[in-house]
Image (cartoon, rainbow, N blue to C red; front, side, top):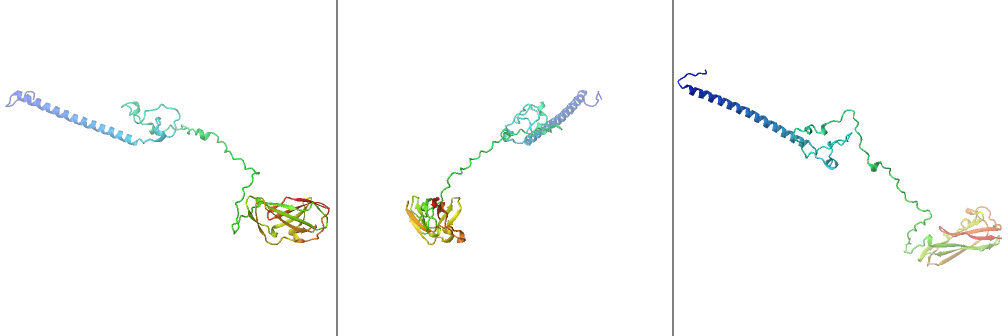
Length: 282
């Protein structure tokens, strides 16, 4: 084998053997290079896919968490302070310790108490009691009612614009008739109309101790209808005759003359009452 024999020269046979060996080596080198190149491209493709998957898996952060430089995106605070890690925009160098799994994939150690978030300072501070407005003064005068008008468009005298006074002699003889009366005055600044009918007029006598002793409403209530127009400051006077005796509601019981002593008379015109007028029975 080492010394070929044939019709050709020995040099020819050696040249052919060397050529076959060179071709075989070239083919072997080509195969090795192809396999190595394919393996390298496959590894590069896997690394690229992993990078793309890692990038797509990272959530887009907004608000407060987007500005945070903490190494973890978890909303649960770490039990101990940690060193700030690089943000997602700065990729760590290949092969460095930071190539390990991100902190978000790591579960907290078993049995570790995770501290609750600190309460807001504004919420923790005591809330001062709301200041209540001072109570309205009971002495404040009530608001006057709106003006009223009758069917003819005439302004009706409000009660606040009606002045009323009782009239009675200062001294009365027991058992005699007495003329008593009332004076109605328009104390307002405008002319107005007022119902002064006898049915709205009442005269009442009281004793010194406030006991009701006599009233026109018991036996002889007022009668008739009368509506008057009153100019500002204008007055009207009405009188009745009183027998000087007592009476009871419904005109029941005996009517007896008032005993000597001090008494008062009060006149009423509808809801308006006069101040008490004092007199003496002798």
